[in-house]
Length: 476
Image: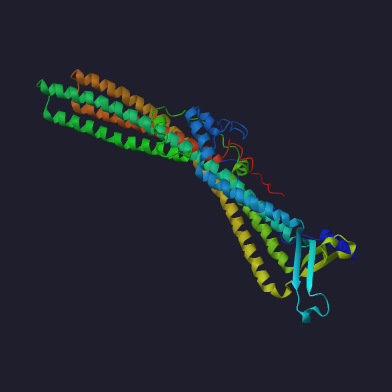
């Protein structure tokens, strides 16, 4: 009889099928090329090549990014969530196998005379055994549940990768802003020094009886106005230093001494190849996470659908019972049982169908989220391409303007000292020089941050994910 039950169970299990829809990657119609891409871009590095921040050639930036990837607390939280999801996946994997428990007991009791019915009133009992139970996955409830858990774990892994992109991009962007603010501060101080020379020259003319108090007041006002920009730039530098420290897992003041020494803005690549929209969708971890969640939601439809059908379980027990401790191993004490169980709540169909409809609605929502993520990635990349190209063009034009204003200011000072022009023309030339140089430094900073934003949108050239984050991890 036992052999027949086992044979029947195996046949039922092998003949079973997983109910519910099978997952298929949804179609995501994308254009063949990016509208804003140009044809003279440098090739985008492969994922195995150096990470993008190395292309800026700045060792300090590289060190900061490495620190952020290893010590950022937001990344630590995301990795902990992945570890929890992976542990739950391992737990779900054990549902494919029988649950085996062992037990043993020893008892002694003294019965009343009426209870003993002529037998000895003191009785002892000994028992030991092994029990096993196994849900036969006839309709795929366990398989669909494991499929959903595996997809959820993959989504958590992709979430960590997506957060890596965000943390690295913010680190690089903040570093660019720091170096840009330091460059603007240098320009402001140079112009303040130049305007101080002008003020001294005007004061000397007044002392010699050739100038007027009006000229001195005007030169003093421009000098003070230029000085007023310095505290704000110093504030921007401090905020960037504090932010970089926190991004790398340090107290806000930890990097002040290290980063206070001015350094030039890193060189910005002339062009960046975005590849094709299709390759973008394969690289973006946020899209992969959205697809994994769609996969999990699809599998959960099968989990809910399986409740429409009966659940088959196979149970067995083997052990020994005796009232003599030394005879547990004797053949006369052995016991065994095999049970094939069926559990079917066929009168609860209304609740089951409601759960199925809810899971289908959740899957539809995840499909919308996936399609929205695809469109959002395409929009972000097109916007980043547009910003990078236009800001680079503005940068080049402002560089020409700054060189022209510098030459004009030099000539104006010479002409003023020769008495060919008045003080007003000199002050205008120096004010225009400060404006042009500051605008150029700001454009260079925005060019660098635009390059970072484009790399972030493309999600290319990133380091390998944590070795623990494997989509198929969690098998027992």
